[in-house]
Image (cartoon, rainbow, N blue to C red; front, side, top):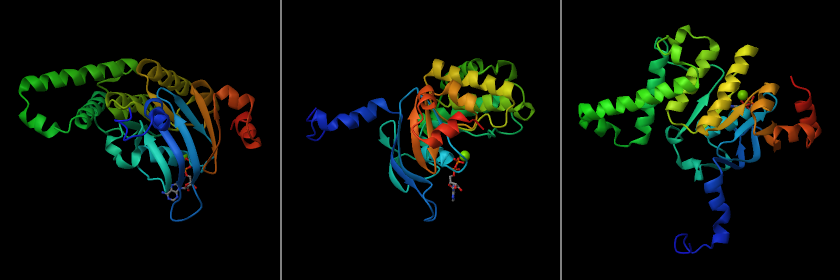
Length: 280
Ligand code: ADP
Ligand code: MG
């Protein structure tokens, strides 16, 4: 080990190795300000393990979406360090972060079918995984292309099955209900091979039965695929039902994080008690 790690001992390397093996995401003392104004995030530290379903709750403007945008690479931290799968995210461009982000309004390709949207995700996955994409495309024999298409079709079919989209594959996305659109966006994330899914109030536009339905599909994604989810929501029931851990933020700071029952039963601050105990 000494030889491998530039003379550092195992003890010295311990925390680093733990990050590498244990955490999908590490927010390490992250600070974020826009245009020198008041800090939107302040010394924000949180570790997220692979396969966790971390739910973030907090008032409007507390910095929840900013946390997700930092993860997606749409914003850069002003201070502190962000690690993705053990690597400093500063060196990873957004396209290479192997994650998918879902908003209240999913962005699907209008005028095209569900199948087409899922296929696009699968082709994108092939593109990200192979730096030789252009060469491959150019030099592929038709047999290779057929094999690639078969792989894409299989992953599209699997995603459709997980998300109950089989009967909708040939439907145009413009004709889908809000819940079906969200499931299509989820499907695209899956076929892209993302193992980290960022959800920003994904059920905000859904009625209660559709919320419950999407909740079940999200649960299945964790069980079947071992995905890591970082999920911002205003829906109290959704947070309690899905979170392996619940994080409460206010004014850019992490007030408490723990299993939802623990946060509920022993809130660390008056704010947490009021926010959690009195769902909006
Ligand atoms: P939340 O998702 O918890 O409602 P946000 O992360 O969207 O909060 O925003 C936190 C704060 O940061 C808000 O005060 C918001 O106005 C501010 N903010 C977010 N993005 C920008 C930006 N691009 N420029 C300036 N201020 C921003
Ligand atoms: Mg937000």
